[in-house]
Length: 235
Length: 111
Image 1: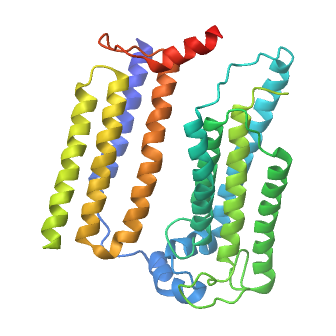
Image 2: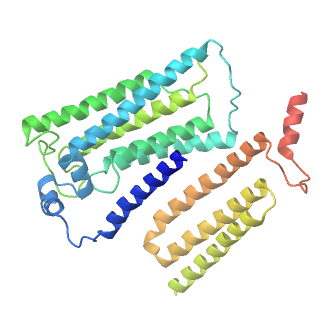
Image 3: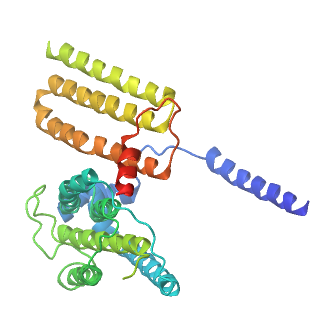
């Protein structure tokens, strides 16, 4: 009875809170001062055609570094926990019946996989020009890995190589940030490289460089996580 | 002229897409639903894309690429789905007469 009462109380409090929010809601008709600053000065200052990218990678670059760190930590913990479970279950070595998919699927995957990887690379290389960026490109690459595992359940990734690549990209990302601190205006400032022509592939200073590192890091990280989820057959 | 022609082709495509939706709703078992969904929606999508190409001739290159990917992925994914459900023993409708995949497996197992 008391428990029910509490539930109703909590529901009531939530309702009161959200009612207040909904009641006072006013649609903003103009940009806030910070947004105005970004929109007015962003293209000239940073040279990125995609304004969202210049906010995400440079103005709020520290937040992005935090997001990359969150992803890294979760990947590391997944690896740790699944590794422990594997060790416990490893002695019994229960081989699961994983049947390979049909020849049709395997052949298609062979032709599709390079195209998917190419698309992922395209997305993070053009992050400063078109929608998308390192995270999205990395996720596309990892989706290609899912396809590979679906077609060939016994496929194995080069674990060590991927880990090295992932660590190096993370390191390089921070290094680029420090270069910005030393050579330009602050941490993760992209202007220590020439800004180039607005709207070209090689422009916007260090933003493409940062997105390449983020893309590689996210792609390899998610692939390693996926393989951890898959690999219950240790040989 | 090209606008009317393109619109007609798009309309034809949407008829096929509608048929695909109807088939998914009405067909008796998963295998039939999969094949309706795949065949009709592949043709429907391709017709819609071709109609768009007639409507906007400038987009034709990209649209052809899209058609290529639809042709590549749609049948294969349905094939994989159907095989997976067959392996899991998803029920067939009682009107099913021929099951070649089952026959192939039993022949292989007998050898």
